Length: 186
Image 1 (cartoon, rainbow, N blue to C red):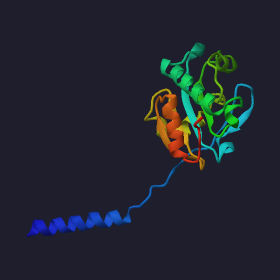
Image 2: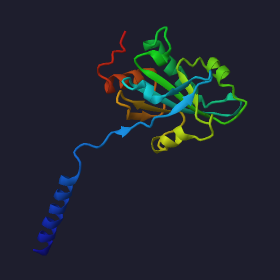
Image 3: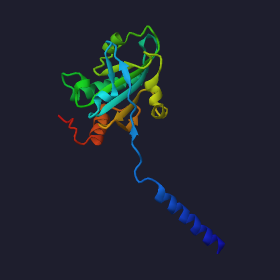
Image 4: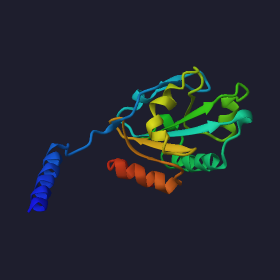
């Protein structure tokens, strides 16, 4: 009899705590940031409010080297750019792509580097000001990912998905899934 009473007390406690739990979790707001591109133009995440954004975090090692998986990710992001940017800058398209790197070597020339890897989207170095504020702001997400990492931000500037490497078809599918009114089909 004591076991039955204990069971019902425990059951009531569990049900009561479920009633107190929120029905919908708060969305994870994306942290705003300001970065400078290799051509000395400043940009921020907030300037893209109203559009989905893909944040591509990666490392550049001394001498401009990157991990092979990062190079493959660039190729896939270039395919995405070709799909919806056409002849315009990807920062001006319906979806913005922002590459955020941690290039600590002063010998890494990001202009030459971006040209070599055919980067067609915004690019900023978080090490530029020695504060690492962008990487620190996204550390809770990045700690679960490897290099390269993709973070998808919706029109309301909320983090809605993150992943390691994705191919272009997976990126486009995810963009359409999180932004149903976005039409990236030809």
